[in-house]
Length: 378
Image 1 (spheres, rainbow, N blue to C red):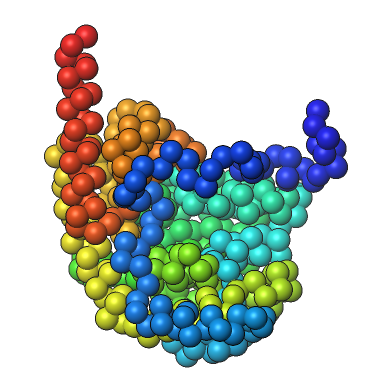
Image 2 (cartoon, helix red, strand yellow):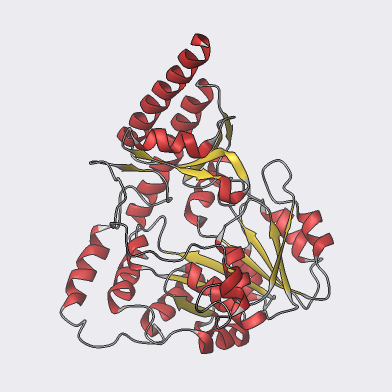
């Protein structure tokens, strides 16, 4: 038994996240010119306005940032046509997940979501001492009927990732409307719309309705909508996200957050990025075109592909994904194997720039040929 095992909390003992090591270099065996298609980052990065805003802010970083992010909250409230008290800004959307769990959960209480959804849900629930119930998927997407059936008197949160990470599947607005009408009053539904801009663009192309989430917020429903600047806005490295929801609930969450957690640089970048509509439009248009090319290329190699509404593609390799990702890494390309999500034969591939996607498909083709040659020689 280790020195601190009896001293730390049960959630800390049970957490699946690995303990930090000080022995490894920052980038382990990272090839030169690595093409990173493993973290759903925006391949074009932030807009010029955001970069300029961050540079202008650097000289003032000797002072603490506005702890309440008032300028950004006011602008987000105007942008989404909600009250300022209905906006909470955090250091990335994952920080808000943690705050909601700390605020609503404790030992004996639970949250409900789908299997093969965002892996941080489990971490946040466990860290708060709660229990996460994961129901089976239906057609690689959320089974809302199964989620409703799993809710009990001890449920306080339901996580709905829309689109879902890592499968990329989307729930249309009418499905969510019907679901929310049946959720008990003691449950808060978190609508995780981290990939909102991509999903909204895909929905327009497909002539379907994506989300009524802001209407729920304006009408005072027990719903928290999660958004982030890490994806379409390209600000993953500065960590800024936000929630839209009931003012009273977000006020309790605000009590739990770390002081000065959103840097002045992050706030300035988000303020600038929110207005750069041409940049966002360019990003989502490239994503839609490249998702088609990437999916068609993987299908041509004989792999299973789920149509996406996000900035990544979920791919069933029908072989061990961890081994596949290791071999691909040697070709200077990183993708995400999904064994930790309960899909050991699947990978998630971020949709990159055209040249990055072509390089990935070339490497995937080589790996496929090598596997076929090995099989034929046996």
